[in-house]
Image 1: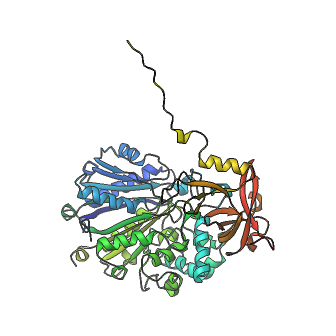
Image 2: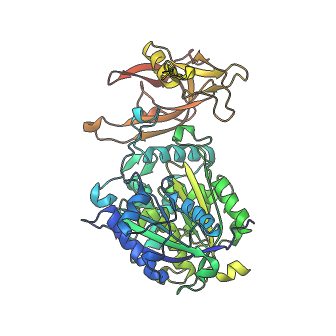
Length: 384
Length: 141
């Protein structure tokens, strides 16, 4: 455990523009989610003095956001580690709050990826010895990891399909999810191949959407309208930028980020009541369950089989429907945090996990490049 | 008033082409060159200013054997109008480092993990590029 355990908490969350928001710009979608998060926290823009924003369309996202919102933050962070940026922001925000550099930290994101492009926004930064071969990134990178996992551990396309089917079953319980119609293993297997062995239904959605999270120090958090969701642990790690430089295609830096988060929280995987993992592709869920200690390396396929991570299964995983079936505007990480908060506050409606006290949230960025893990808990988990 | 001459001190290390530019020049000459640490014998690719991790600056250029093994592979599906299917792979060079590449000289479906391949310098849009193709019999050792 370190000094940051339980020192800060999330006091407000907001979502906006999930699915399709035609005619809305990324900053507008972000700002609407900010308004809702501040309402949720019982705060106003004037209270915000810490700002954390990442975006795939803005080069200087905190500056853009601060101007738009009309705020003058004392501390800001625009770290760009892809979809894991928001889990990384949580850790930085906790440090800034604890150090007294700010009192109300706002983490925000907005994207109109679906309406603007209708496809995954291609990176504008050519990668040496990668871009020239025209892989279909990011899909091909994850396909390469999948192929190696299959080769080394006997993971099958049916195992992958189980992940997509479980996500869809959760989405069926979530009125905000983009894809809610039932999905079968057979349908995933029959979907057109994008980059073998990944089919279209092994890939995340392309939607619009924005999200915002408000954090405060724990003492102040207790005066807010909603029950605080405490940050118990967090850690980040990255080992490569290009997929060819990943040391072992079957082992992610989640082994490092997860270990750091568990150590800070003084908890292990067996104490996690629910898990929100960045499922950009079906292999992600399998890799992260392994690397975060929910099963041994190579056993992720068996672990997810038979509806084990679907509603009613042994471990609630990606309870909003995930990037596969709920929302994925390009950088999904913020939505993982918001789902964990809603679950820990018992606000998740039909998809509510029974009495959760702890939640592990795991962000992924780049092509399995950056991993960032946060562990959240209720008041009961904090004092346990 | 005394005027002093100011001589601009150029960094001698950054005079002349950097490692990536040198790699490209070699490739344009038909040579697939990678770097090796003189003291440890470890190879590194893509080209660097120093050995990643250790920071060692004792890197020398050596010609790659061109021998490699497919570490992982994927068929990128594209309509024929957009060039058709391609085999994208990560190959492990005999010298140790890995690189992304395209496997040519066979159908994408024929590429499997563990397959032995050999480098072939080709050109793409006027630029030299390293592809790999299946190793022919007797060429693998």
